[in-house]
Length: 157
Image 1 (tube, one colour):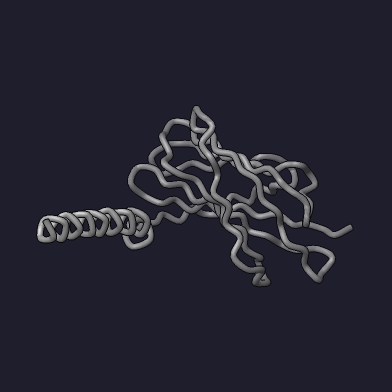
Image 2 (spheres, helix red, strand yellow; image 1 turned 60 degrees about the horizontal axis):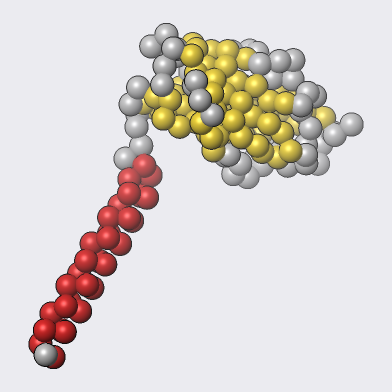
């Protein structure tokens, strides 16, 4: 009886080890094996004025918007990215200061149907009265990771 229970215990531990290894591999896979990156040129469009659109090399159109306007700091903002003509697996927005490091700020947007992704974020306050930002929209589509930069300036006034 003791030998049988030891064999069962070993089988359960081995099975748990395989499940654990599979879970870790699934979580680490995107980090270890990131799709190729395609950096798109800046559009010159100002997100403080309205939504901005850029074309992907495959012909898809990416439209990105932030609301409310003017874009505030230290208050919730709404992010919306829409990919027309293609199918995106995921969308994230990487916020960076153009001329000042502001820490890691990369919200993941949630799919809401028809190529639309939405999410919320909050921009940190800067010691200056105005701050130049770059919102790089990261779109995983066509087996590649597209990086579309959009710029805007916030004000504390």
